Length: 291
Image (tube, rainbow, N blue to C red; front, side, top):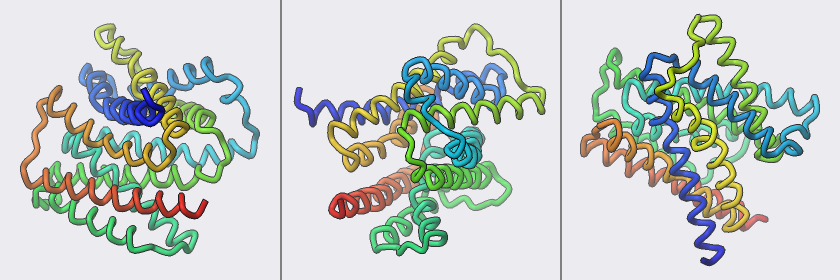
């Protein structure tokens, strides 16, 4: 097996494992456990697992780094929580697709805050994303319906993840270190939220395997595979292959949860993929040429 093929396989596996998170998470919350309690378990167990596997990386931080990480945690917990709330309204696949507007939000943050220019590729990507959202709603714009609420939650979740990326990209931390401490901060947040709402509880034994899969299958393994793929085939190809994540979530939702989409929404999904390819592909190629 060549290095190229190995890297592509690892990148695809990373996207597939990340895409399985909504399915596994909803299997747990279907037992009556709250979203907050489920996310607390995911992030706490992920931190413990990362700390055990990579102790030298996880604990190589200082006080200044913690300040920046703490700001990023807020964006991450907002994105994590609102994604699942969005999925309850419009399904896992559509929610994940809407969530992936975050590259467009990030570009706008760079434009407004850092005064960076918006190249043609980003403008075209935003146009396709806007068109995609229109089709994904199936042109049902009633502001009181689940469709509207789900899309708004998904968009705000995407904004939260864009804020997380914006705040952490200059942190100078290894991916493992950053992920571990964001998981720790998120676990603290959801623990407090669960206690405040009296929803912190142990999951039933019937979903113990799903609980175990949260840190292993949905968090640590895809992180490791992604990093290894970057080392083998580079950032450009790995990032482009990560676009498979919403497609994976959509497929899992149809297969395991019986979710359905209309042909109009299918057009929206295609438009969103085009948008992500234009935004990510052109931008990454530009950055590569500048290196």
